[in-house]
Length: 210
Ligand SMILES: Nc1nc2c(ncn2[C@@H]2O[C@H](COP(=O)(O)OP(=O)(O)OP(=O)(O)O)[C@@H](O)[C@H]2O)c(=O)[nH]1
Ligand SMILES: [Zn+2]
Image (cartoon, rainbow, N blue to C red):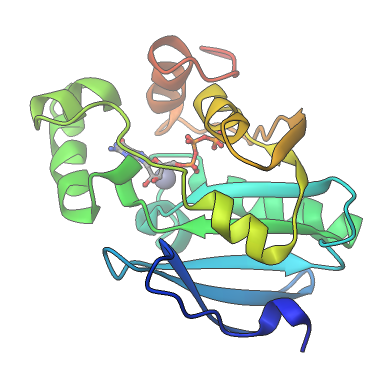
């Protein structure tokens, strides 16, 4: 057990580290670290591979929960393939980290995401659907990444993302984004509009239509 595997308990902390274990996958056996958000009780996970606390930049993915894409094979988005590709890339390097944040549906939650998908079935795009439900396009808060990365001993990252908002959110933290690594996966007919809307309305660094 490394010093970072020691449970931390402080009511002043926004995030409490709970425990770690091994997580064997098809690509590598990761170390899985569990955290709980003090204010909300939300549970978050980090996967690490290799020595991420050696001060060198860490290949990292900050992934927001998408039950439909990550676990239920939905083709409406690119989340599942991105999650898989990120874990593959980390495994290829033999070193890296993935933070799995429980911010389903860009922060609106699973039930509201189903409502948003219903509106999208009727013609709204992903941003319009959120707005019709009374939400901003993206409600996510990345501030928890800071204590998670600190706990893991990660000082700088090579961040795998196409989302400039994620990059700028990270820049406000103690962790340095040393490099932005694009994470482009194959499109399909069902996520074409979703990805084009990300590019045109949310500023994602992907082609509007390929
Ligand atoms: N509200 C809403 N959320 C969605 C929709 N499709 C996917 N999501 C959510 O969008 C989030 C995608 O998060 P990430 O995988 O971190 O990706 P990203 O912010 O798009 O940026 P990348 O790092 O480039 O992948 C997840 O929380 C999904 O649940 C949608 O149509 N509406
Ligand atoms: Zn998704």
